[in-house]
Length: 116
Length: 115
View 1: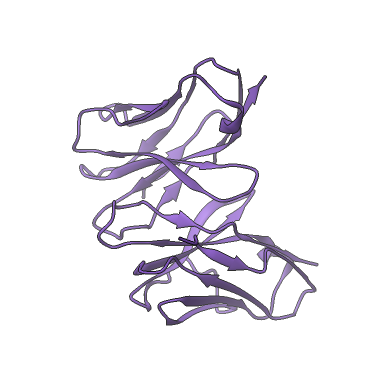
View 2: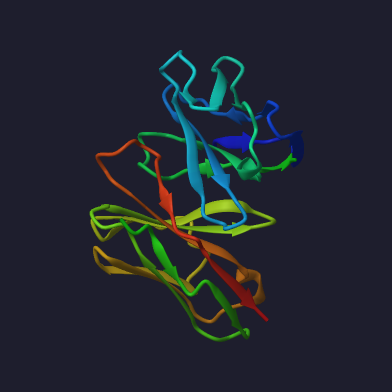
């Protein structure tokens, strides 16, 4: 079975600085998807960034980028120029494409606080 | 375009009562998912539908839980009878089959408290 581990329950960063959230996963699959979802205090989960395992190039979305290390089964999220609105829970998630288009396995989350 | 709409946003009930949670997916989306979030177990998939048909309900905890999708614009998750351990936030999410795999659009969740 696949597992997703986020070893940092809480993190904080000063506004405008850079922070990296860690995620590791365990799978025997060769093809899969990885995600970072954000859950602000409003509770609504929002997709931040998505990575396909067969792509070697790391995904980027504006201030958000990932460091995908397939051999190490590591998938970290880097947030540059942190903003107060980035304060949220961040969840790393894994998905096997052969199973379904939305059966995600989530990590336990990292609570990020951006301080002014 | 309106997002995924869930109701109620909060529900407090007593053990043994029936609870019905409702979801309206984004128009045109053909996948609908019910997730549950608790402190102990995190986020876990309960059931999902494709074109209104239940595809995988292996995450449904037990027979007290049931979900239906009578049409493309409405789904319910019912708990009968409810128990204190069912207290959680229940999320509905929808997605487009032709869209990016794993890109789910979540509602704001229904926080259920069973006393």
